[in-house]
Amino acid sequence: MMVRTGPRLTPRLGSVRQQPVREVTRGTTNPNRLRRVDRWLAGPQAWRLRAGGPPIIVDLGYGRTGVTPRELYDRLRSVRADVSVVGLEIEPARVAAAQPLVRPGLHFALGGFEVPLGGGATARVVRAFNVLRQYDEAQVAHAWALMTARLDPDGVLAEGTCDELGRLASWVELDRDGPRTLTISVSLAILERPSDVAPRLPKALIHRNVPGEPVHAYLRALDEAWARAAVLAPYGRRQRFVASVEAVAAAGWPIVGGRRRWRLGEVSVAWPAIAPRT
Image (cartoon, rainbow, N blue to C red; front, side):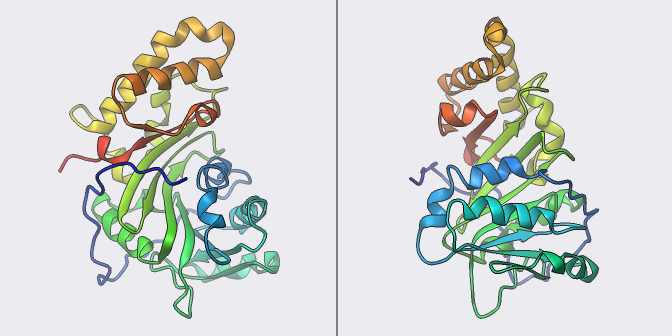
């Protein structure tokens, strides 16, 4: 089911008439790097894939190889067999290098934030990871507007960042009306404290992790709850993380989702609670 999360969008999305800025990413594409966001797309977001006709899925800015679109294709076909995955890159050499991976339902093309699909087609999912990290924060709203304009009515944009091995990740969930949630997903095996994810916050938030900003207060609340839950350490890190999220939710933070996700080291919070101050 779709979870309503209250008031929408801060900051405003930019005009889609402006010409997009194009910068080639470093292209790091370690296998299995994006497993955490893929698990979220195939889990609580699976209802989107099942709605309506055959869905088009876009992996935007996939990097030097086509491994992440191929993994996305494999993972989402377990939810719906007729998904079509399109890997988009602005670097022609990367599109050419990925062609050996082409198969029915998986192909690669030139494109950026404007998400060119041809024939007026729209996307059910756009995954844009480690793309906006190199842009200025002021450019984020415009990039979001371009990408969300290409979503169908049940579509979602997952825009975020992760480390090179996919152990620390965070992303913003957006639909056509703007941001809905922030999700952090961490490997509990390496976790020292929840704010370890801070260097991997999405571009819209990474420079806002300072006193006085809501996202800083949120991460601090998670850290404090994690510290208080240390008494549960003998029962395992999953129990400790679940207890930490329960404490944060009890303190009034609008947590979205439940224990099944928390046990994975994943927690989502409604966007208005952590949106940057203007």
